[in-house]
Length: 500
Image (cartoon, rainbow, N blue to C red):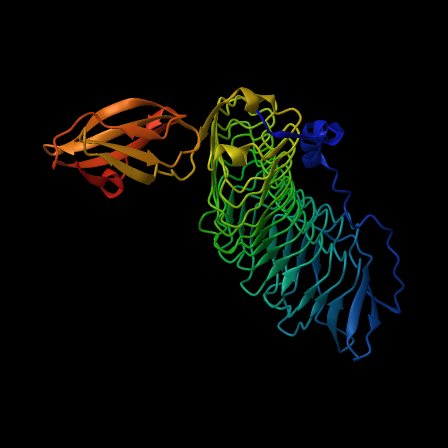
């Protein structure tokens, strides 16, 4: 192989496999509300400490009771209760149910960590009486017994960690006006099975390690952020038609996912690093035509992956480790791609056939190391291939069978000479790159017939035998390239000779 060898340090490339294996296991952190309760109440009424707000209404600051069923009061001393304060019930070990039954209730805010760590709480019903427009972050975090939730409908989103580690929740249907789900909102809700969401954005780690989540209806989803569904090991289908971005590790380790068809995602432009890494049962992937960015290690360690179709017309790079350690058998890298980065197809032992674009400029170190490549089809000519920079650790390319799929250049007639004494003609033509031999055929009795096919590749002239003066012949010149004779468009390529 005549390609240039890039002198690059292999240390970073050699580390790619260990990085790919460790990234999906990155620690996400503890429950976000691991803080002490610090509240100072102005007034006490029964089991409630409360304070008066600037508008004359009341905020419940702290619940001091031991009752298992709690009724949120609509009024205290004739003044409306409009807010459940930050950490108001936090850490209470006795409450199992919370209700608002009064028609006069005007609560419009549930504060941060309001019910956090209420580990006995099973039911909360604030839907019919509460007018809440704000539910604070971590409001129900670590309520590990919480099974039934009825909340007001007039809020825009689920905030950070709102239901984090609520391990008993099985289903959650979001009001249609909810547009976003915040960071870690349902993180490690291990019993959550069904989600219906009509909004556009799912935040970082929103459903991280929701291992039983199997049904997800998200018809308008636009943005899935980092680690949003990482470790959702029961998720087998995803509906992403309107998606524009997929974040880093967004669907990493979703081991039930078998088919990923993103062709209908016409607006999808970006897939992040490790986005589908370690989806060990993923078999078939189709990437859309407007994809411009494919992240590092996007599909690494997808061991069952056999079929990858890349329809993108805008992708310029196959990034580091993108398909490393997968089971793909064939890959067609699309035209427009200029670089294949380090370890992109490393350890793809079943990868036998590859098709590379004429736009390719570099193949980085170990891109195809430890793969099974035997056949390389290059969509350009040999001289272009020889100018591609190929890094170390790609020896498999040097030993593979090479096929050049460039547009065929037909032999073109340069000159025709006639010998009137012997009634012969001599034709001269332009050479064809990589030609192995030339042949001459003529048309007679409705068929093309071979006159000769043993003209050496170094010869670009042919002298006919003695012919009949005045006879007319339809003739064509063909070249043999890569072991095949080019017999396309013979009638258009043919030229006519009248013997003198």
